[in-house]
Image (cartoon, rainbow, N blue to C red; front, top):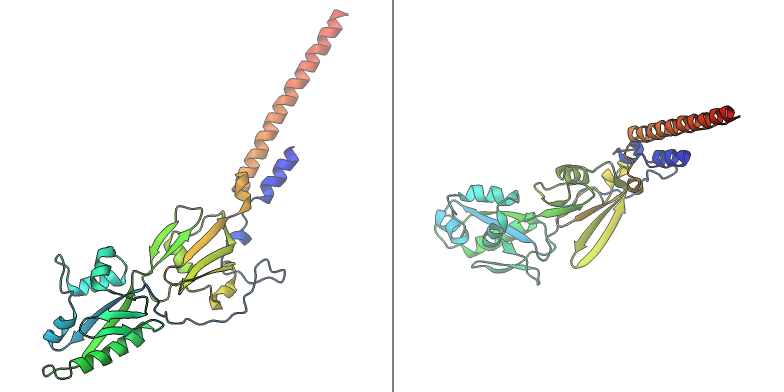
Length: 284
C-alpha cells in the first residue's frame, strides 16, 4: 500500500519538463517541432469589428465637420483616443465614437456614405478614406488636405485555465504574442497542461480550434505565436492534479507520516504481544 502511494505520488509530481517554456523539440516528440514558418501579418478587418476614425486637417472647420467627438465629460479628444486605443473607456465610448463593420462589409461614414472595409488592413482603410475625403472637400476652403487615423478598437482575448488568471483581457498592442497574453493574465499554474493549449478562433462566422504545445521553442515561427482579437485560449489541467500531490516535498511528508504511523502501530503490537506472552508465562 505504501509503495503504491509513493509511486503514484512521484508519478504525479510536476517536473521542469512539464512547465518550462522555450524548450528545444525532442526526437521522441514529447516536445514537438512545428515546421510552419509564419511571419506577422497585419490584421484584416472583419464583420462586427469597430473602427475608431479621427480626421485631421489644417482647417479646423473640416476637422469638426467629420469629428463629432469633440470632448466628453472634461476628456479631451486626444485623451479619448488614447483611452479607446488601449481598450479602457467602456462600451458606451466605443459605440459613440467608433464605426461598426456591417454585415455587408461596409462602414457608414458621415457625409461620405458606405465605405468597404472588410478584408482590409487599417492602413488600407486610412488611404481609402483620405482619398474619399479629399475628393469630398476639394472645393471646401483654402486647405483641402486631410489625414486619417484608423484603429480597430474593443480588441480583447479570453483565457480559460485552472488559475485565478482566467478572464477577458484587452489587446493593447498591435503584435501580442501567446507569451505576452499568458503573462498579462497572470501566467499559468503548475498544474496547467502546457502540452495541450488550444486557441478557439472565429473567422468570418467559422470557428477554428488549433492545438499546440506552448513549451516548444518552435511556436515562435508558427501560426500559434500571435493572438488575434476575440481569441479564446483554453488550457486544461494536468491529470496528476486529481491526486492532490503538488511536489516532492509533499510526497516526502506523506511517506514520513505513513512510516511514523507504521512504526507506532508496530511498537504497540509488539508490546501487546510481549505483555500477552508474559501473562501466559506467569499463569503457568
